Image (cartoon, rainbow, N blue to C red; front, side, top):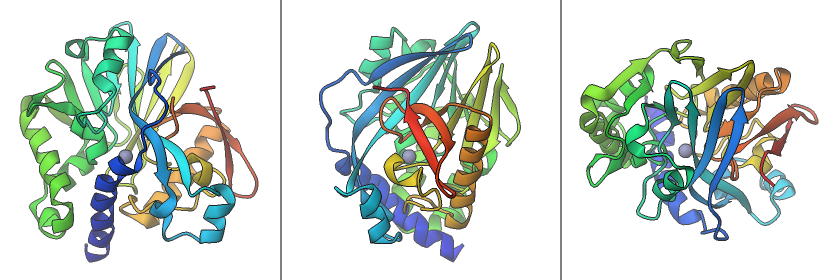
Length: 298
Ligand SMILES: [Zn+2]
């Protein structure tokens, strides 16, 4: 537990710092629409900006400079909404800070938050669950919320919280979310089918129960990979590098490699919470153990 808590401590700090480090980008909608089989996928930014490569403090500075000479790489906090016959599913909810673009983004997409049926949570870091709350209540009054059992149990575990005072704010937020949504919260196991055509995939490492979601619709697929990548410019060519947000580094690296390998092999487009807007693109094998990412944006 002790080795874990040091990384947890770094991660809470990083989460707090993250907001400040995402410089406001050019004014843009932060909303883009894609079609995958019979599903409409809305990519909606909660925020956009550049991320300081200081979060890769453990990496060789030479390597970081080679891929990100300016020391800052484009990033974002992305939320994805799947609109299809039978209902609306949202993947994560962003940080939900006052300046969040998610509420206006949903309006722009023509989606009433009260019409969202199901919210799937990749993990319970603040930048993925903060947006579930609005003025201390539910921001999505009619949604069921599904969280991996391992993930939910970790954040509700008193010993885990006591072991890591520096991450207390995140533990408290997780508990607040669980309590506000109480009856609407349910858990899943890796491998479960959560809704028509959506499978929970083990992506543990970034957090203890970090989950990816594989959507299949009309013979097409898209892989929602959560937080396996924080800086596309650096981590696709060097997928072994962890950000300091990665709570279990010994698992985060292998999970990143495994998921990117699968995406490249099976030609699955990926949707990542911290890929630069719109957060969706294709992955191919690159040099050595590296990958090449091609954004579906401009
Ligand atoms: Zn995150």
